[in-house]
Length: 332
Image (cartoon, rainbow, N blue to C red; front, side):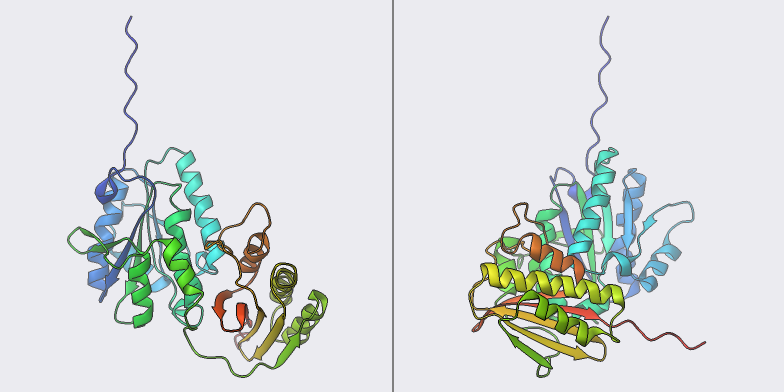
């Protein structure tokens, strides 16, 4: 009696066929029609192949895709605003989603996403780090991802970073081309800590503390944030500042300086020490199991805050944490 042959294991399809790990592309579009020409075949081919096919776009672009899809084609639409709230939490949540699909037997997962326009401002450096880091952290899964960018609305410095953080470009008519400007995360991530801040500059700080213990820094955060931030946001920012001040005293180089800005739409706190900061280029975006400098403490900070920026400068290493104020209630 012969043993029946096992069915062949499912394989990846399309441009990612034969690729191991994350197949990461950027799609630069200048019109809704151009976006559809890139994204629609990608989604339809994924559904036809029986692959989990996900869309994480803003409301306007998601509606465009929904209207263009045939009524019998089912694609999973993910709320982009929620998913892309914070870089570190986006990594955590996407990894959990990809793990679920992989454990269910998916040979490939297709996803098209677009960061909200607000990420192109002062918080862009954190999102540039995200776009670079996911080349490493999503490589555990058979994911084919297309990141869409409107080249007419996106600032030039952001487009330049997109080219550096995406190994390939997806274009209309099924073109998938290697990107000559791509830099590996180990090269790109340290660069983001040494360049000037993007976005609007901050005014003079409203408060500056020299060598404060964590408790004093927390009190300053509560004093500045009460009435501006929700209680949950205020608690999260206080935890982040406390973790960062503790790290600076424990692992950094004196002096430690805390600066605070209480602005109408946000509260921002920076912590500077004279050291060089974490050696791990992924610190903050991924947890470090041993709790070392730039490991769990910095990862907690990234989870807690709306925006976190890190940089090296003449005065040392700075972590800048921002929490946005809650919008005023709508008039009835």
